[in-house]
Length: 539
Ligand code: G4P
Image (cartoon, rainbow, N blue to C red; front, side, top):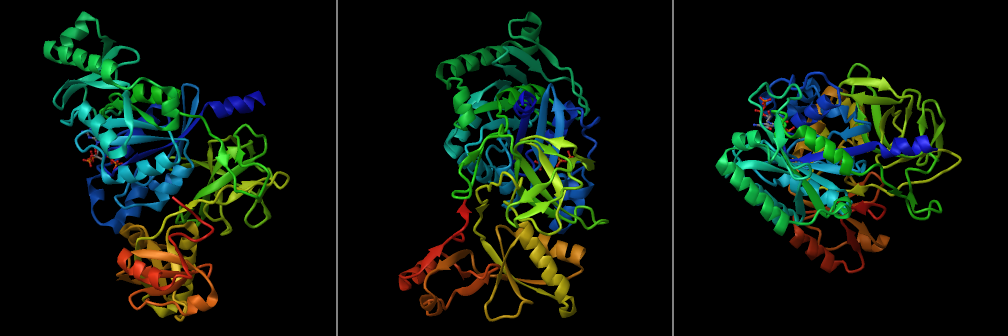
């Protein structure tokens, strides 16, 4: 049992949240480099080519050293077992990213020093905040001209309402920096002149702040400035509080440059020390006696947070990713799928490392395993043992914001079309609706961003051989309607709305805006309008 506890304690499972281009891929590569998981980071080709057509996105991602489909990267560092959950870094509001955060125990928020807190980061931050995840901030691109660290702290507070505790602090003035000062170790790290894009861990010039050589290297002006900054932080800054960090109320702040591999190691080490090991998870009310499951509980449990079809085009497989929450996973052990009430055999459980897959012999809470999905799993499903049944809380649902009418261009491809659409709906890539009076060849698709529609188009063509005709609809809000059948049939004021059913035949209405919605709500006092279905939790 104590071995089990040790395995849990040394695990760190986290996601990096950022706006595209802040340097998430670069930072991930550098972390893997420290973990010895890759031998030479920075070998990824120029990514400039990726900034064009979205339809190329998946192909391009596949060509990356770290692809969007690898999903989870595991490595060992200094006694820790680190699981990085890879989140696709596209501009679009992505449900997939939010779901991935459900599997994390902490988050690293990556900010571009020149750009500060950007849109995507904001949205992801709030998801982490709601989950009370500890959030660690890494301000990247210190090698470039940027904002002052006080401005960054100010922005964190104003935009995200979170106070920061700087662990490292840039040395320099007005956006030009030459290194960092570590407030914990009271040491200085100065940029190395080497500029091989950080494809090896660099030995930078380091030393104590008191060291005359260091003082000399920093120069009088920067040195004085640094002393003033430190004094100000000590006097007026927040007190260090590990409890507040763990609650996600105070964010430890680090500065560095992922590209030149500067400040990354000091960040990694402090992050591993302060971040949380696997945490207890909430169970669904009324299914079992307990309301939470602790990772130390010997009974195996896991939930599925991501399903990815056709990861390997040659094999047409479909992989469900599960996060282990309690107990120990051993290859070949019989498990139980709560939602279908059936025993499942996980014959080839896999772990993913960059593009390599390896078969897992055993795994512990915090670990992520990919299992072959014969088409039975859905997002949020529970895997446990038949003897100790339990079920996790439902996953939050994200109300769609964009809608489109989708049909196959060639009606002969109807079968593949329906199959592809339902598989993608099951993966949670899209939400699918149908008009009650139309044929099943027309689907209304709801998404939270345009990228999802483009991915749908691409995947239907490439994986199911079906060209789509997609027509955007002018609606931006959906509501699930609950009420009496007669009231539903006689629903009033819906001239400008569209009435649909979801895949579970529940009535849904699409409207253009809040005003139209209020119009309908006022005219139908006996009906209830919900932003997510009754059995779903809203994020
Ligand atoms: P993302 O996954 O968050 O979208 O960002 P990614 O790592 O792809 O980095 C986006 C761009 O920012 C890349 O430049 C990358 O080299 C650069 N970058 C990352 N970290 C740093 C840093 O610490 N300093 C500086 N100056 N740049 C950094 P690119 O021009 O788009 O691609 P590439 O040609 O450099 O590969």
